[in-house]
Length: 461
Image (cartoon, rainbow, N blue to C red; front, side, top):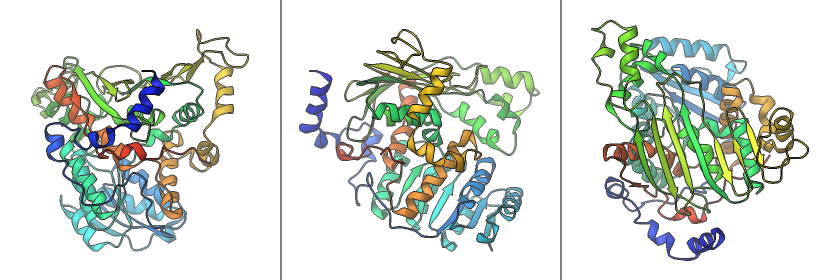
């Protein structure tokens, strides 16, 4: 079959019913029949003024206070954190916002692992923003939706497939958004690549490469508070890809996975030996330090290959330990050309204007400037001036602005719950594959077959 024939075959046969049972082991056990309505194209009732509660106001949460709180017609009504110092600093940030008059009498909750539950019970908020330890994301999202709030969760959505199914089932039952806030989908490069793919300029998309290569060993100096205080333990307890979504999210949307065109099928995963964390701990902390007592077992570098139902492939890599410059790879290969990141590169079969003649050389320099000029995403053109100073090159602010804009205007969110769950499911699936010596793992279909009729992420201004 040709590529087009296979696509037509998938859409016109019994694939939808097959997907209802295409899960494996625990993924199948925990799926259960939905007791609600599919959320892939869900639009929530419009909210003119959006009341916001935040769980976790450390480094990331404080940034969200600024981003959410600076948008007109938003009101921060409550914040919760383990540490009083984070509460105090957050209140100071709110007082210094230009929109501070919109955020009066903010309720605060701190000092206990479960104070966030009291906040959800007592606070009349519309949405909750969750920026905590990964292990808490799933339960906090579920409880928030049960308390009638839309949940917006920092990456990953959750760390186990059981929790991901709990999130899906709760969202469908209570008809509440649960969006994983994958900010990289709003990067300028990623948005331009999406625009080029949607225009068909790469032809049929065949292969992608995605990564999170980021040397985070310095976080180990955050011993009692901060990201390193809990993230360091993750390298001891788990194997596989612990943080897959930053690279995978954009590539998934380029390929329209889980949205009409194709979806995830299987993966295989392998890890290198575990060495870097042990060496770093030995070189930087005394021999009796708690980090030197950890049995770091997760390989420093994890490489995963995903196969989709149309036979496309995606290579996903993860490494937070090795001495290497940051990269997300961000490559998408089609039958007519390729796009790649770090730095931004492009190659087209027929060349590009007067800069290249064919695909045997990358467009670079002034050619890349021209590429952006010609194919910048309409959303980037409209929002960049508003959000460019908001963090991570503007992607954080654009993501938050779009969340509020969609809720206020009654629009589809740019990322749906099933995407966040599928991208996050790599945490458990890669672990299983690594532990089983690279045995293929089948993706759970969180959409229960409904991906075949889910609208693609729309290109709009």
